[in-house]
Length: 308
Ligand SMILES: NC(=O)c1ccc[n+]([C@@H]2O[C@H](COP(=O)([O-])OP(=O)(O)OC[C@H]3O[C@@H](n4cnc5c(N)ncnc54)[C@H](O)[C@@H]3O)[C@@H](O)[C@H]2O)c1
Image 1 (cartoon, rainbow, N blue to C red):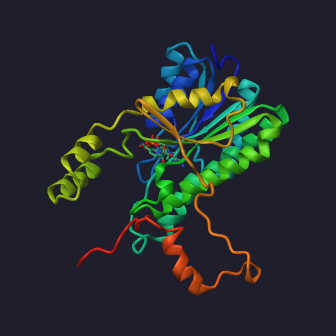
Image 2 (tube, helix red, strand yellow):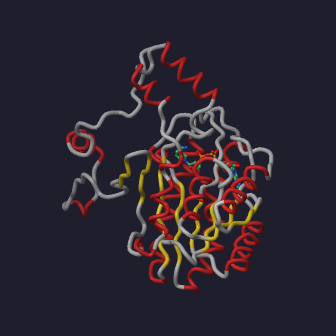
C-alpha cells in the first residue's frame, strides 16, 4: 500500500473532511493519530465521541489508529500529541491540519473574542502542529505537511477573521515549504469544497432560501449549493500529497471537490507599470492618470456601492 509504514496526525478528524482524510490515509496503510476536540461549529464544547468513532472505524477495517482529544490551539497539548505519535508509531511522517470552526459576523459587529478564537484555532493551530512536527521531520529528513486553507482567502463577507486566518495559512505553508524543502519535507495547502456542518446546515440553508426568495441568487445558484458534494472527494488528493511520489510537489495550493482539482495563480506578478525617471518615484498625478488605464483597466470593484 502507498502509505505503509507511515504515521500521520490528522486534526479535526472526528467529522467532515478530516474524518474522510483519516479513513483514506488508514486505507492506504498509514497509522493515524485521530485528533478532534469534538467542538461545535463555533468551536465551543468538547466531545470524545466523534473521535472515538473514527478510531473504531479504522480499527474495524484492520487499520491502526489512536485518539487525541486536545485542542490544536494549545501549543503544549499539541506538543504532547506529536510526541505521543512519535512514541507509538516511531515517527511523524504526515501531518494534515484540518481542525476548524467559524465565528461569522460583519467586521463592525465582530468581537475581539470572535477574532482571537478563529485565529487561535486556524492560524495558530496550524503553527502549533507544524512547529512540533517539523522538529522531528527535519531530523528524519522526511515529512509531508498538508494544511487546510479555503477559497475564503480571496475575501469573504462576514468572515474577515476566517478569511485572514486562511490567507495566513497559505503564507505559513509557503514559508514552511521554503524552510523545510531541503530536508525532504514538503508543505502544501488545500482549499476544499464539501458539504459538512460547516457549509451546509439548517441556518445556512435558511439564509440561502431567503436570498433566493429576495432574488439575490438564482435558482441555479441555490440548486448548486444544495447539491454540494461530500467531504470524501477531498481526501484522495491529500493522500496523493502524502505519498513519496509527491516529493517535489511543494509550496503549492490546490482546490479539491468532486470531479475537480485545480491550482491557483497565487501571488504572482500580474500587471505592472514602471518608472525610470525621477529616481523611480511615482507622482500622485501620474498615478491618477496611469492606474485606471493600466493596472486597473477592466478590473471591476469587487463590491461596488449599492443604490440606497
Ligand atoms: N467544508 C468546506 O467546504 C470547506 C471549505 C473551505 C475550507 N474548509 C476547511 O476545511 C476544514 C474542515 O472543515 P469541515 O467542513 O470538515 O468542518 P467540520 O465542522 O465538519 O469539522 C471540523 C472539525 O474540527 C474540530 N475542531 C474544531 N476546533 C478544534 C480544535 N480547537 N482542536 C481540534 N479539533 C477542533 C471539530 O470538532 C470538527 O470535528 C476546516 O479547516 C475548514 O475551515 C472547509
